[in-house]
Image (spheres, rainbow, N blue to C red):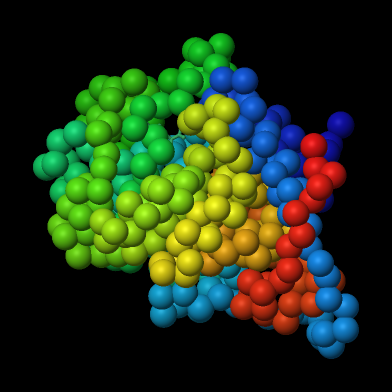
Length: 356
Ligand code: HOC
C-alpha cells in the first residue's frame, strides 16, 4: 500500500522501498548496536523550549540566513554524503541542482559518485563547500584541494571523525560494497574502489598540523567536522580552524558515543562564538533545527533525508525535503515567538528532567 509521506520519517520508510537493500542499509544504518544513531534523534528531547506567545509575529517569520556574504533561504544546508548514485542514478548532479535551486549550501563529498566539475556546474549563484577526507598521500590531498578551489569551493570541511570506517553490521550482513562501475571520485580510472580500499586511502593520524596544512595550502577557510568535545574544539580553533562542525557522522562511526545534540551543548559553550558552528546528526524535524540554533549552531546540515528525497523524486524530491523542514521550522518560530533566526538563538531552553 502506498505510504502517505507527510514527514521525514515517512520519507525514510518510502525510500526503503525504492533503494536496493544493500545501498539502503549503507545509507540508513549506523555503527554496531545502533545506540548512538538512535540517541541522536532522542537527544533533541533533552532540551525543551520555553515559548513566548506575545511577540506579535505575522506568520511567516523570516528564516533567511546571512552567512559568509550569502543570503540563504534558511539555516538548513546539505551535509556531505558519499555516493548519491546509490540512491538514484541521477546522483549528485540532481542533488546539487535541487539544493542550489532551493537557495542553500551544497557540500561536495570526497567520496562522490560524480565528478567534481559536474557537481560544481549545478551551483548557480549558491555556495558550495568541499568535504575532505585527507589522503595518506599529500599529493592526492593537494590535487583534491586544487580541484575544489578551481571549481569555486568556498570552505574546506575537514572530516576528523572517520579515520577508519565505523563497524557497520548492516553492510556486513548485506555483503555491501560500492558497486563496481560506480566511480568514487577521485578513485576512478580503474583503481581499486572497494570500500576497504577507498577508506584505507584516508589519513589516520589527524591532528592540528593537518588543519594548518590544509588552510595554508588551499587559502580557504577550514571547518573541522566531527568535533564532539570542548577539548577538540579548542585544539581546532588554536590550529586555525575557521569553523567547528559538531557531528558524530550520523551515528555511523563510534557506537556508544555522545548524541550530537548533547555534544553541541558543551561545544557551543566552549567555542563561545569565536567561530561559526555547523551542526548535524539526527535532524529529522524543523524543531530539531530550531533547538540546534537555540543551542548555539549557526547552520544545521541534513544528509540522509535529502538522499531519501533524491531517491524518490530526483532534484524536486531534494527541494521538497528542505521545504518540509522549513515549513516545520516556520511553525516552530511562530509558536515560540521568534521573528527571525537571530531571535531563535536567544530562545530559552529548559533541560528536560523527564527525558529518558
Ligand atoms: C575513511 C573512512 O562518510 C560514510 C562515509 C565514509 C566514512 C568512512 C571513511 O559512509 O559515512
